[in-house]
Amino acid sequence: MQLRIKKLRADAVVPSYQTDHSAGMDVCAAIDAPITLGHLERAIVPCGFAMSIPEGYEVQVRARSGLAAKQGIGLVNGVGTIDADYRGEVGIILINYGKDDFVIHSGDRIAQIVLAKYERAVWQEVDELDDTTRGTGGFGSTGV
Image 1 (cartoon, rainbow, N blue to C red):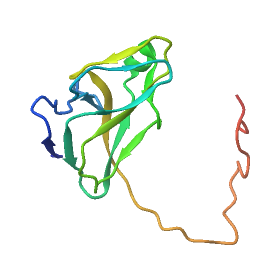
Image 2: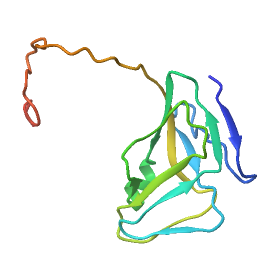
Image 3: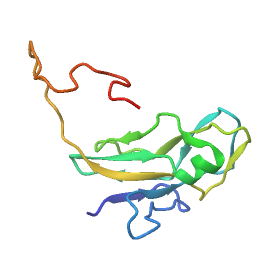
């Protein structure tokens, strides 16, 4: 599938897959000056591009596992969603869960994005739901 992308800065890096079987494309920072995140500090880091996502798809923004494991860098919102009708600059909401300062430079790979198909739901209010083996068993109900 081809996606349309518009660089908003000359030094913006087009997201790219790092291996033949990667599901996510790495996304890079596109900033004028380094950003330092202290412990539990967060920032929206611009990526220097906008894109056109086809109707029926979203782009999911996810943390890079290496940054999370080695530096404690994650996404404030867990997994972000870029909707098909958004045409603004992509920005990544990073947080530093680590104890040490983390410095972001322009061109650093800071997150990954995954193109995902979705369907829109229409709720149907009912008086009863179908029965299942689990029923209303919630958190921890299936054991450890």
